[in-house]
Length: 284
Image (cartoon, rainbow, N blue to C red):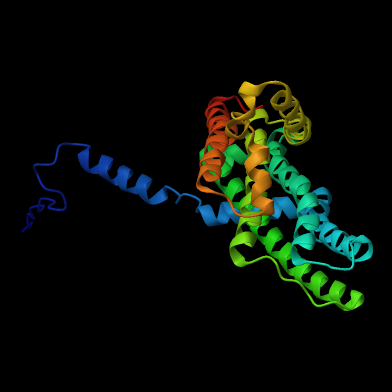
């Protein structure tokens, strides 16, 4: 006798599922599982920091901050008058900082175009705004750390200079005034960063910064001396006026307003234009 066995129907899938629907869901779930997680901002910041140090030029540019601080401190001890003050060392160290820090900010941005590494960088991280944000965080970090180093070196120089001269140490800078110095150098660095974003060429951005820092103020000074209508207006359009006050004392309420207006004119507007063009330009 031959036994007839009936095949039981498959119950793994509900009968109401349309043909191919289950397979599509499987593919979608697999695609979701395979999607890589976005690169965290902290990793991009660490990469940008390493890029600033790994090359010889980047390393020595950062090292020059400490070297110039020591040289400026030694120069003050040797050539300054007998009565030394802490503010003398801070101002002496702050001058080379105002030149070096913008160069660091400029090169951190323009290196993607001058060294032709932008294709690799913006392919690995297609969101250009995140890359620029990471570069800005690194530049600001370098500025703050550099100024803390300058404050420490200036303090040591003040103590040593007073010991050499045989006079008591004069500490004429409080925490608020030191904060103004840090803010002043940070604004100078942001100027370099803005020019790097706007021009995206190392030589062009560096020349533009020197024009901004060393050519524009004398021109505006001559204009204010010969045009009475510009004399009162100058502080509202010349950033060097209020930035100079940051390094030499506290600001009044009107001066803070002038600093805000000049920062909008010379920093916020050019940076916005630079970011707008950078996000839409072709990477070559």
